[in-house]
Image (cartoon, rainbow, N blue to C red):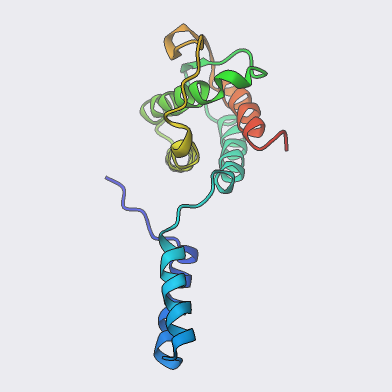
Length: 163
């Protein structure tokens, strides 16, 4: 079980509000403290995580050039199908777990774990979206890990609006 370190940026508003509450215990200071505490628990937006996923995919692209991973992964062939993007990303996350099992390189494993966390967080609000007539993972074509990474990088860029 991996223990994740808390992101200091998420804790910063809490500590700032605590500091303000101690030094400025006026009614305005109390309002700032309460609003800051509320902002800490608000979820980050989906768009916040996709650039990190792309950076990690690019990192994996570089790492797998020097390592042979004998794995074929279910990969969406038609990246232009935006109507099935959530289904494709759910499959992508499942296939990342295969990479964790097949690859023994620590750096790749850590990067894949980070992608899984960020992609799951980014898809959290879309989990209940029903996409009709989309292929399930097992129906997708099996491709090499290099093709898998390139394809899903394109799909993630689609989530960012083509950036």
